[in-house]
Image (cartoon, rainbow, N blue to C red; front, side, top):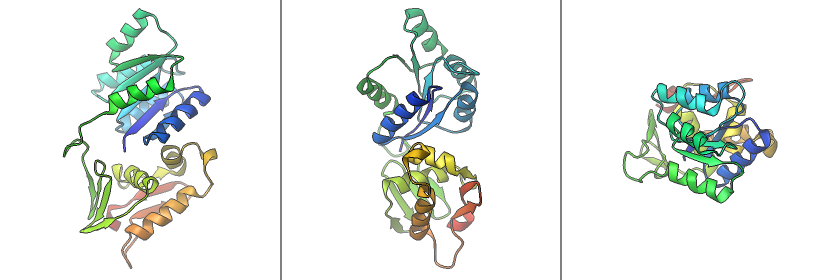
Length: 228
């Protein structure tokens, strides 16, 4: 599942983009200002960054220049109401891969997203993740524990994919809700707990510690010790 970070300070726009992209099968996270957007883009790998030009704290172009200076090569789609030729040139020169002027049509946005995230489905195009005897293959959308195949729903797969990208790191409940389900108002309050319960039933070994650790009041972490 391709991961997209949307950095947009208008809540309605961020919500709309996240919803539409999730409906297309992407895992989406959002940031509401330039400082948070830069920190998250620099700290975590994404398959695409969608940056608004005009942001509080740091503009989209400033984020872009900082990321390219740090040799972070994730594709970037720059969104802006500034549609003069010199503005487009500035954005592209800063390292943007594509540019879309507001207002835009959603089919065009989705076409550009598909083009920027398109990769050949060949071995190694998107590496499998292995922790202990658990392996997740993003290309084939498959999970195995040892020699046994584990059947997961699309949402369970997306949830596990996020945890396996950062084994041992605690992901907050709000981060998981935002990335897998969308805004918390869109789902029931115990959606994360229900998903964790289903994953544990499918992944855990009888008598062994759970591979998904609960950090009370914070969130969840995938523990390699539970996958041995």
